[in-house]
Length: 198
Image (cartoon, rainbow, N blue to C red; front, side, top):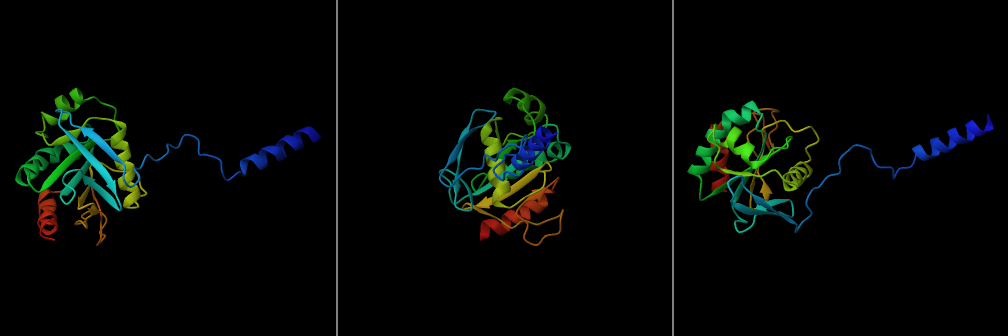
């Protein structure tokens, strides 16, 4: 009996260790300031995204506008807005870089092209699946202090490495740093007009 009590006490003491790691909870792969990730699109184009204090920039276009669109090929709202996002990218080709980050799925570039880019006219920069996608998503959610599970599509807009205030049609916040769910491109267009003037 004393043996069982001793084992029970030992287990209680071990269970109170504050240094214990959560089993099954993936660690954040958020980028540190100065780190960068190289992205290759499903069409073979390449860009580098760099971590700066407070945000992210596209290397070589540090003062430019960067839209990061977290999406899934299975996501119906993502499919519905893909063509409109393509038109938005074409309209702002010299001012804005739109980067699609496939998330919540493990599909290769051929699958993304055949099941998303081609049928939905999404020929903007869609990054191949890689650990860089998760690193960018982790960085974004850390930067904007987003604690919920990401709902797709999920977008942020940065200018000069700073997250921009965006029109919130979902949660009613006045200073929202993201778009969540399907969003009309007229909303994005109006926000871009303001952001590009600032």
